[in-house]
Image (cartoon, rainbow, N blue to C red; front, top):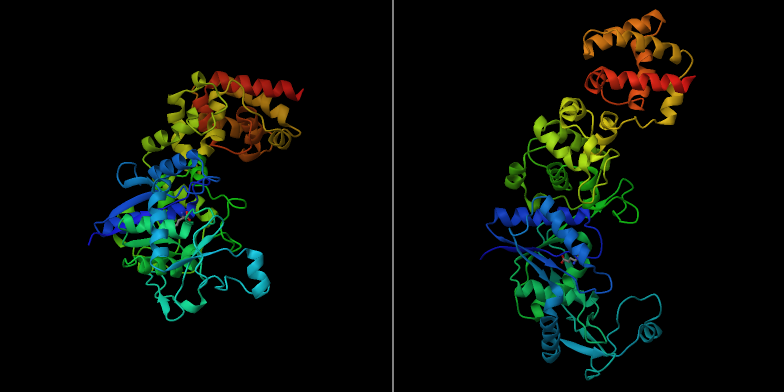
Length: 469
Ligand code: GLU
């Protein structure tokens, strides 16, 4: 039997990193089993869906390596409403479901506010279908439902504790639980790999599979993803959108490697491994069922390692969207014709070892392309203390006289200027750096000056000097 898995996101917001993790796990499992990955967009909640969210999911999947055209689908759940209704009808006709006209208030009046769930009042009333009547599944009174779960063993649920749950609303529309099962069934899904949040739905869904006469899939409920306070990652509180990480300059390779470490690790005490190793070694039954901590700091450090490992030419290429402002990435502060690829190539290796996300390239190199540096006023106040004017004057004179404009000579020169004033190099550098780059931190100063060139360096030193008068 061919393994068929599916990833079934609802397009109700940005694409959640936890979803991306589940998608990758499905993807790898399918690949290992020689199976098929199906993408199904669960778009039945018309009030919350937006087409741009669907497009966001497709492009984010593409970015992490689940390329359009290399999977089956996307299918859209809303196209199968007829099948969902037919299944509800079949369950009704087979006596597995019944109509119910109880309101929530009716149920609570009978059971008291404490008791949760439906009390089965309409089970044997034999109500006909009708406006405002919900269809409820008649759960078995006895026995248990054993869920075979690759991550969690065999969670077992007593049937008598499962309420007669709604499968179609009063307006006749089937609910998520049923639509999801019917689609999995008609798409021939053999393994359902999804987030732990859905585990409580699973015994109900498995009962539906049984009632519809089809062998249920094997389940795998992968751990919920939490923040440092052990709270479930939420879009209101945490940075959860895969697109946000992409636009900030996380590398797809780093991101997908990190996502696969949520609840699992490759062999040999390693974390950074080639994707091919993950594809080979990943096992669903090795996934730790406890909540997985999404550690943004660690991801950042991870990304820095991936950036440093790139060949310089690839790094230069990878920076391009931030240097030009492409798609959803904000444009840089310089004009396109101010950008100088040769100057960028000259400093790229210096920047590569210093940034953790690609968007940080912009503040590191903007001084090279802008006519005037963007002065950070706090940096200015810090660097331009007493003696700064005198030091800048002396630096201008000494730099003007330099025969060769190279990093080494520039360094020796400023060192000497500083020494004459009893200043160590670090202290002597500060006013020069702020005058030329606008900041107190950045790429190595003398290499930066070499690339910036004599004229522009002297112009900026003089401009700073004027401001100090
Ligand atoms: N559409 C559901 C969700 O986004 C997924 C349900 C499932 O994977 O079974 O949470």
